[in-house]
Image (cartoon, rainbow, N blue to C red; front, side):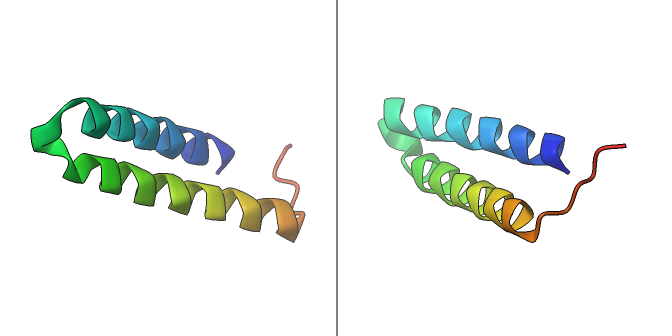
Length: 55
């Protein structure tokens, strides 16, 4: 689960950078920010729940 959140955060950052650099792809900035927000919320929920998924 933690690896999935890291992958989603990396994709969100790449989309945000791409959207910021290319004016015609400005919607990617918003998509990146939304995906990053979802990744952060998922990480916070996982941290608050206190579940230990390590074996």
